[in-house]
Image 1 (spheres, rainbow, N blue to C red):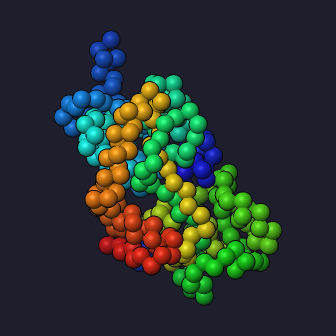
Image 2 (image 1 turned 60 degrees about the vertical axis):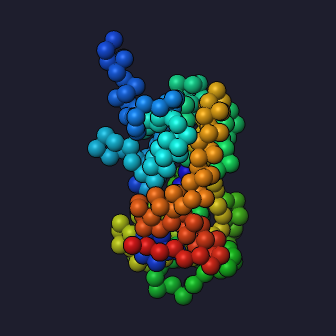
Image 3 (image 1 turned 90 degrees about the vertical axis):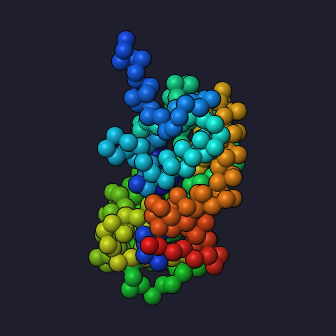
Length: 274
């Protein structure tokens, strides 16, 4: 989940359920160039949010890293990435130290476009043995125990539901383990990140569709970089249209972006996993 769900200080269903000289050198060391020299360069920052962004063996990796690298290339921009705590990332972009904070919920003080390649689809996960086959509304969980994550923001409709027993746990792994062991009736979370965690744990759980709520995220640019932002936003729109975004999702998690969206919305799409 992102900052619309997690506090500012925070760190598939699909069929298989589913990351002096030193001063002069610092930019190239911290912000590894993604290709040949281009007309302009932008410094992006991110926080660890698998499978979208992370650092592995000193290299930025993830769905969002690959998508934004390609979008920048199409826009004639050289992109470099650095992992930072989220509050620091936002602050550095706001004051112009860096240029772009990736995957943020809309906020004042920055520029963002209309094209989004990341969304959180908030769904209920249940045990494989559960008789529930779809989400029909919050009343179906009346008197049931549902886990959330300690310190994270959730939709008011859920947190204000007095007839649902909400229990705050520490992290998605704890949620899924408690659910698989029968200690909870459901776990509420993001379809993608919780789905990936469930796959890693080989947890016998599955999500219910349609989702309760969707949050869309965008790269946030320092306002002085609006022209560059508009070029990247146009490239992202083209990538969504030509299937490039779907291909990158498929490569990373075996499911397309459009397939995830259709599954979460219960609109009849099929999300296939490798």
